[in-house]
Length: 132
Image (cartoon, rainbow, N blue to C red; front, side, top):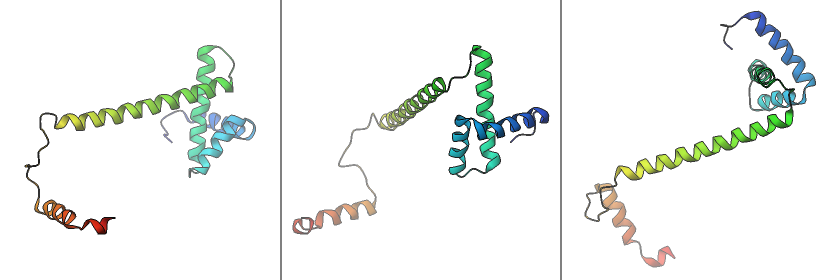
């Protein structure tokens, strides 16, 4: 965790998160989830502290009380958005690979390495009875 910020605020936030992981089910589940993934106590507390800051910011910005159901909806929306962006990235990657050779037509006369030639020759010399 960065030591750039004010230590007093970080200490207050840490103590608030200690209470949160004892009594708030949302923060308790988040803490347990990150501890089971292999994070140590302080790393998991850093994640919980970040979540608590986002909750506080949302309360102040929207001037409404915190609602765990709305938070869950937002988490699901973020996961869907992440999946869509990953799919888009994979499609763009495929397109870039396909467009790389778009002006070249596949040809049997294309030069191949000696190793590839030997592999092709060996694959063609296998009797059909052995394959079945």
